[in-house]
Image 1 (tube, rainbow, N blue to C red):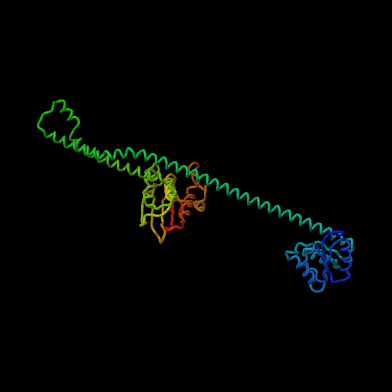
Image 2 (image 1 turned 30 degrees about the horizontal axis):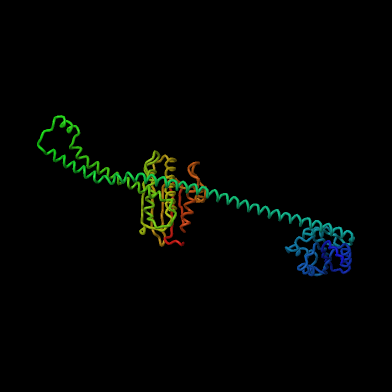
Length: 440
């Protein structure tokens, strides 16, 4: 069997004149084109719904809808909008030609026409149409590749950002862990001599009291000391020493108690690296954090000591949470509050009364913790970005912009929310809302 050559293309010829249809069809068939025919505009519109030609030869003057209307309808449909249309008509006036091209026709041939001319025009427009299709296909492929490349680049940027964030968090976590170990070691070393002092203070007090009583009894005895011994006693002012020793012992006891509190505070802060979820006293967690920041609350060259107002109204006091993360959150927010007050004090010539207020309360089934300051505040253009990773308004070396981002993630991990209200040059309030019953 001999394979039939593939046709050069499919041509739809639309003309109400049977003679014209026959002549055009025969010459196109002889030129190896597949030919479809339609005797009206309506018939042509129906035919293209199930067979799409490569090119359409269209008469203008036909009964029913004319060629211009047929062309207009074909160009409105997405499936046929790009098919080249060549008008074949006896209308040779300029107005008709202009109208044809305005409707989207590819060419315009006036009758009578030469068969060779029709074949040549059909071949030319088919080549142009295929070339345009190839360009469009290539453009689409390039556009798809560009889009895929853009998606890959976006993914790489997101991955790089995530890696950078993770790396910084690991560094920060390692620093906190190292700080906790160091403080824990210091607290342990301090606790040993403290225990020794606390253990020996009661018997020392007892011995001193007994010696004092013995000296008082000895002073009542009726005898005369040698002159040199008496001079030595007079030089040390024995009466004053006996009166002052109890005060010294009480001072040592007070100092020992204070030192024991400091060691306990250090030990509590050293346990911030405990990441297991457990029940803690939220007020003690706040107090431990304030203890670690106490030195920053004191008087500085640029401002007075910060007034601290604690309004603890949360009655249950305890909450189930990750102690490490919650303590880090309080530490970050209180540090930011102190920084904001310092920045305002350094930028202003006016004497301000620095103040930080911490409020805890229960509303419905949630714990609300508010930390407010009367510091520099947040400028409106920075406000939308305060929880963004690596966003910071601090000078180089004073922060990498992960503090509030970590705070936001910590609160989300506890299924809570954090809100911020700030007025530039007046102050900022952060409100943490934590559900008292969290889903596992």
